[in-house]
Each structure stands twice: as C-alpha cells, then as structure tokens.
Length: 238
Image 1 (cartoon, rainbow, N blue to C red):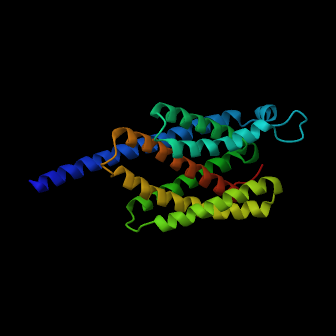
Image 2 (cartoon, rainbow, N blue to C red):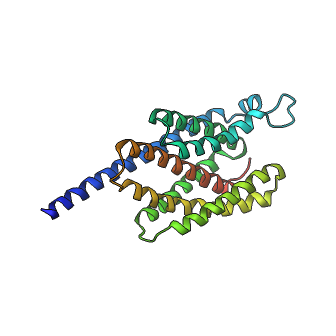
Image 3 (cartoon, rainbow, N blue to C red):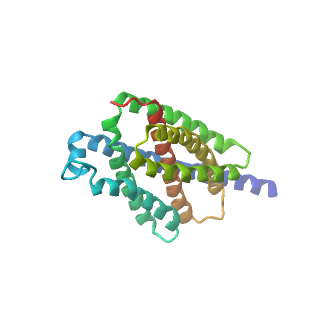
C-alpha cells in the first residue's frame, strides 16, 4: 500500500512540476514576444528622436532614463512583494515590465544590423537552453556558485551605470565578457532553484501561480541580459 501511495505521490509531483514549468516558460516567451514587438515598432530614428532626445537635440530626454531604469525598480517590486500583491496586479506589472523593456531595447535597432540581432538571438537561445538543461539536471548544489554570480552581477550592473557616463569601449567590452559568464551561470543556478520550487508540494495553488510568474520574469531578465552581452561582443555596429 505504501508503495502505491508513493508512486501516486511521485506522479502528482511530476505533473505539478510539468504544469509549473509550462507556466514559467509561457510567461517568459510571452514577455519576449511583447518586448520584441515593441522594440521593433519603436526602433526607428523618428520615434527615438521624438521621445528619447531632448528638445534641444543635444542629449537624451528624461523619458529615456525613466524607460531605462524603471524596469529595475519594477522587477524588484515583483520579486519582493509578490506575496502581498494579487495575482492580477502581478500580471499587470509583469506586462508593463515587458513593454518598458521593449521600449528600452528599441535603441539597439538603431545601433546594430538586423541580421546581427537575429543571429545573436539564436546564439543566446542555444546558450540559454543548454545552461537551463544543465541547471535542471545536475545533482551538484549550485547555491554557493549562484551567490558568487549574484555578486558579480551587482558589480557589472554598477560598472554599466558608470560606463553610461564614461562611454568607454574597453569597459563595455569587459562588462560584456563577464556578463556572458554571469548570466549563463545564473541561468543554471536559477533553474535549479525553480526545480526545487516546482517540486515543493507544500505550496498552495496561488503561491505556485505567483512563483511561476516570478520565475518567468527571472528567466526573461537573464535571457535579455545574456542577449545584450553577446550582442556587444558579436554584433557589428551600423
């Protein structure tokens, strides 16, 4: 009897895990689709000049910086307050995040050739997929590794903000190289964390729904950052 119950429990656990990851990837790919459409639509010289260049035409407008930095605060809000927010509000914030990221990414349409963007996207998908599989299947505890990657991420985030004003090509190149390692590493680490969450049978249905959305957001963020790091390295500027 115990054997039968164990088998039934394992079956339910596998089904719940499959459903959890189906939702995670649905949110991730949905966000990528929204951002891609927005970036393609807004990525024209006319739109950029109208909304993201100041009236004097000598620099970037305040709206540009709002669009560039608002996703950081919004992403932190979703991750830190998901338990207190309703699922509907979380979903709305998630969609707003994807739209803002699309507007922010529209600038790359003016800098890089479309062919380079497409090639980099597929390279990113391959690298991301490989590390996601590794993180899901490995039996090695990646907790310490993940902590190290997060510290490196904070370092390159701060360096990236500084370089927005310094405009150093060398620093940008170094940040991109480190970023590739950081974001591929974090992908493996976070997939392992998501696997543990998916198999946690103590979670309520609502908690699982919210955490699948947060998981989709995290994978989306990692994918976008890996894509941008690779684009700086292999993309040819127009």
